[in-house]
Amino acid sequence: MVQGQEQGQSGFTTPEISRNVVRVEQLWQEFFLDPSQWWDTRFIKKNPKYPDFEHKSTHEGLWIEGWLNPPWVKAKVATMALGRVQSGSELRSGVPDSLGKGVNVRKLCQEGRLKEALHMVELMVQQNVQAPIKAYACLLKDCARRRALVEGKRLHSFIVQQGLHSNIFLKNTLVNMYAKCGSVLDARQVFDSMPEHNVFSWTTIISAYANHGQGEEAINLFKQMQQTGIQPNKVTFIVVLKACARIPALEEGKKFHLDIVKSGFESDVIIGSTLVDMYAKCGCVEDARQVFNNMHERDVVSWTALIAGYAQQGLGKDALDLYEQMKQDGLQPNIVTYVVLLKACASIVALEQGKHLHLDIIKSCLESDVIVGSTLVDMYAKCGRIEDAREVFNNMHERNVVSWNAMIAGYAQQGLGKEALTLLEQMQREGTKPDEVTYLSVLSACSHSGLVDKGQHLFDCMCKEDDVIPTIDHYACMVDLLGRAGYLADAEDFISKMPIQPNALVWMTLLGAARNHGHLEIGRRAFDSVVKLQPEDAAPYVLLSNIYAAAGWSDEVAKITKEMNDAGVKKMPGCTWFEAGRQVHDFVVGDASHPQS
Image (cartoon, rainbow, N blue to C red):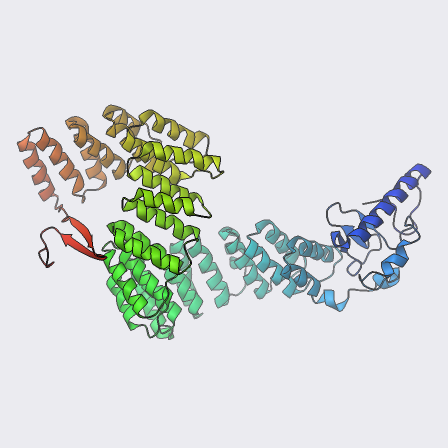
């Protein structure tokens, strides 16, 4: 701010005045070159000491009637399309209707100029000019869209200063802003401070908890809403059903299904699709299918939800069959549908079906999508076609960390450790930072390739250089790295020094290594630890029995079998899939129902 510009200001020495005159003239020249870089504050200021124009970056000010102005300024301002130049008394007479209605603020917001709109509101607050509720709502929605929490909190403080904090409309918008910005605690504080709630208030806070992994609290809030007598709307039901799907909470989901029937929403296609998704993710594919069959109208989301349900439950064959029915009904799959189907092909190694899907994806012009491309890489790799996976990867116009991880994991699964490490180096050179999944894949690659030293080095780099916190899966991978190479004592020592409690996966990994290397003592200790954590699992009994059988200890094999029977543990029958002519056949041990069994 250039001091002493305002009208009538004096008391400066000649050198100071000279310097200020020069600077003021420079500023006016900058102003006329690009007025868009300046705030026009004439219509909101009440104090003449505030400038008429303020620079958006430097915050230097200019006064139209400033006594240091060059003589040509006032005439030139009058010729610009910036609004009629008024006298000082007119400037201070009040705020124009357009600004009082928040038109300027909303216009700035609509144009994506959030910081400028915020600054305008701040000036209004400083001048005790009431900013309109619609202007605040517009800004809060923009903050929610941009995830701009800091700016949202500033707006919240302005709302409080202007005495608007009891307005239910603004309160709901604040709850929504905090929720969308990821601050569930702030959202809850605003919600709890509300003297009354409507269905939008409840839906917004329930959605906040559901979307941030706190499904139990979302369900509890839904029940509280019902106890207050407020009826859920369609959106509320959709939100709480998604919370049930994520937990999963089947019994609660069934109760809400009954409420939906009573409310008359069951025929809605979005509600129906969400119910299909909820039952499928809760493991009840038959219930999901029943809801699907009863739907009067189905869209691509409905079909995709059921396809995903079958895929998630394993038998992928049913998911692919459903895809063919979907096409016969004339529906075009979307990106999510293709991703689900490609994962199904990967899970049952249905290469021909995967290739067919790839052709459909090309015809649908979706091949350039980074998610679809990454899933294609994963599918080809898991089907053993590493060259095809690399070709898709090389042809991707855009790659993200998921794309790199899919290709690295493909090399790891094929035991191509050196190729996986080379790709990791390329990934880092091209500026993509490895994440926890990347390191899981390269550690697995090192394990399958016997690169023990390199694996240990990468584990250290993961923690120290890339700030990736090791999960239980990373520790299990390190146990596999050591155990697979025959360093069983080192692997057991590594487990004893883990900073987190080893789970059944870690001990099963050690038990598997003991089976491969015929180490009875370590195998028995690993077995005991697994059984304590996972007593119903038949796998540790089978592995330990194999160790004793390989050592020729038939009596111990019999003891293990008795222990398994006494514990009521049953071995699940093996299952395999076979693809012939784009038809997937599944076979289960002991089941002779298949015509070609």
